[in-house]
Structure formats: structure tokens, C-alpha cells
Length: 441
Image 1: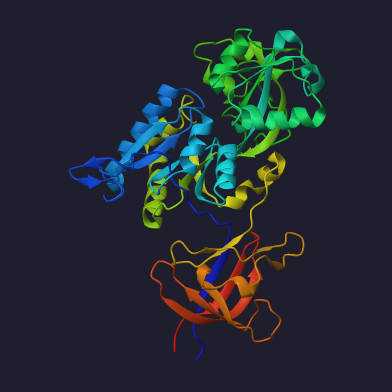
Image 2: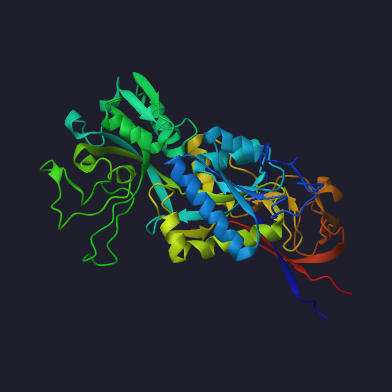
């Protein structure tokens, strides 16, 4: 009798690493945080937020999100805005199983790099229908910078928010280095909004920060949208006549200028976009190493629920917060192209046995050109420490292939079983799929 099949899927390993110095020694009522159940007041779950825009608004929004999660799931969450970008990375690096947060793209990649895969990503932000953004180079229109002319920046003073910011620093710095742009001086402002304000106040010649696609008026056909490569001020600024597009025809902008226009209503007239760098994958929801899988899924579902509530939409889409309109499921390979741009190694792919929590084994990866699986760790070295071992190389070729017998070990329950490989193939997403016979007699 043929047994039903069980599928194992090759995914990028997202092992989560937990938050540095987060009250693991607190003792309430004689029970330490380490002993208390995660998600209780005695052992809270920590939501870490990056101070990218308006810190008081971010903290207030984080508190509201934490309260909504508690009401929806019963899990007790505490929101914390880190002191700077580096502090969030360090907190994830040293975390102890009770931390999740909203790192930027560069932060997530750096956390993954420092922890050797010790972070688990589940959701990416969606802003106005786009799952990517870009870095914009902003400059006063009165200075006469030419659109798409990087050479105009040579010898000028640059305002940026933080050296760990993807759009504010890393992508622009990559571009300047590539084309030999020599900056005369820099002003580190501590936040995207601060950079725009500093530019408006004349503290620098140009500033960098997040950019966002412009949106057409409501009367436009729904299938007409801005696409990457279009003028970043399409429908906003008439470059031919050097003035704003007439109000009744004007597209709306949601970039960094939008975040300050209440205090600086003439910002669109004064500040233009002269260059864009990207596209950049959006920021994400990530969990540090050791975060329990069951609670990870509960929180992921709760966040998706919350952003679709009227209260959640108001909080998440606030320009003073992170301006998310939706969330979309992702896996780690979503960030591979950005890793290449920023000079980070693209990680090996891992195999994970579904249903065996915590089992992530660095076996091999799919070659992008041939779509063939390439072994990284010799089968002989898999061993029981990985929880997966080959015990019947039937065709004696030293590779995993159809007909081979493998032992599967759930590293949580320590239970093991043997199964036969029925099929091996690479799917459209570049993941190795292994179909094995279900355990049975």
C-alpha cells in the first residue's frame, strides 16, 4: 500500500534571536520573568520600534498597538522606541525569546548578518499598494539642482538621519561611492523629519530620506499608477514650467515632505526631488531567536487583524508613525537583492520540517540559473545534531535523490521516524520541495 506524502519545503532560515537587556531578571511576586509564562505582565513580550519619524507619536502608537493586541489575544505586550537605529539591532542580537519589532530593511539585514540567521521575518509593510519604497534625494528648488544630475551634489553638505538607515544613508552612500561624489560635509539629524526640517532651515544643501510613489487623483482610471522609473514628482511638479501642477490635476505625494507639511505648508513648492535610489523592500515585522512559534503566529495574525480595523488603520497609516496601509506575508529571500546592493552575503537556504518547531537545517540551496539543488553540507555531515540524516543512499551517489531513505527528527519532541524520498523539485519561488512518504508501517 502506498503511503500518503508529507511535504518539506526549502525556505530561507529565519531563526529568531532575542532582545538585549530586556528585564529578564525582574521578579514579581516571587516569580522571575524567565520563569513566568511569556505574554504575561510578569514576562511581557517586547515590541521594539525604530525612531525613524516622530518619537513621541511612535511611542504612543506602539502603546495603542500593544493594548489592542492584549484585548484581542490576551498577550501582554510592552512597546519601546529604541534610542537609535543601532540600539534596535543590538536588542535583537542579544534578545532572549521575548522580542519582536519593526526593523527597517537595513536593520533587518544587519540583524540577520550579526546573528547568523537569528531572526524570523513574517510580514512586510504595504504603503498605498506598494510593497517597496525608495530613497529620495531632496534639495531646495531655488538652488537650481538639475533633475537626475548627481554631479550637482559634489562638494555640497548632506543631511541624513542615521548611518543605519536604509533610505536615509545606506542606499545614498552606496550611490555616492559608486559615482565618486565627494561630499563637503554631513549633518546627522537623528530622524527623517529632522532631516527635512534641517534642509528647510538651510543647515545643509540636500537631504536624503524615504521616498514614496505619488498617487493619482480619484478621477483617474484605477489601472493608472506610478511605476518604478517614472519621475518621482510626476503629477506634482511641472518641470517644464518650474511650478506645481494645477491643484485640480495634481497628484498627491506621501514622501518625506508629506510628514512635515502641516508645519511647513509650502514644502512642496520649496523642496524638490532630484534623484531616487532603489527600489527598496519595505520594512517588516520580525521576531528574535527563540520566540515561541505558536505565539509568533498568534501575534502575526493579530497584527494583520489590527491594521484592518478602523482604529488600526488610523494608527498604522499616521505619517508620524510608519504610514503602513496593509501588511503582506514574506520570507527572508525578499531581501536578497538588497543584500547584494549593500554588500552583504546572500544567506544559505535551510530546510525546515513543517510541524517540527525549531528544526532548521543548512543542507543546500537552489542554484538560480540551473534551478538545480546544490549541496552545501555533505550528507555525511548532516548527523543527528541537525535532526535529519540520510540512512539509505540507495543509488550510492552521495546525494539526496528519489528513493533514498531519510530519518526525520523533531528536535522539540525528540521523536524520530524514517521515510522514503518520493520527489524532489524546485518550485517557482526557488525553494526546494521534498516529498517523502508519511511515517507508517
